[in-house]
Image (cartoon, rainbow, N blue to C red):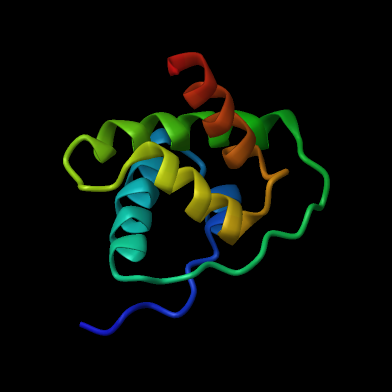
Length: 102
C-alpha cells in the first residue's frame, strides 16, 4: 500500500469527541508514520483547554502503542515537531513527558 500523503492530525484530533476516537487516531497515526507520511503543518488557531485535554489523551494512547513498534519516543517527538510544529499541544505535552522520564 502506498504511503499516505497527508494525515491532518491537528484537525482530526479537534474533531474527536471521545476517548475511543482519540485512541483510534493514535493507531492510525502510528501506521501513517510507519509508512513514511508527513503531516500538514499545524496552524495555531488558539488552543483551548479542550485541545490540551485531547492532546494529553492522544499522547497517552500513542505512548502505550509505541511499546509494540520500533519507533523510539524521541524519534516520535522529532516527527511530531516536523509535522505539527514546536508549539502544538501534542508536541508540548510529549516533550514534557519525555523530559520527566529522562
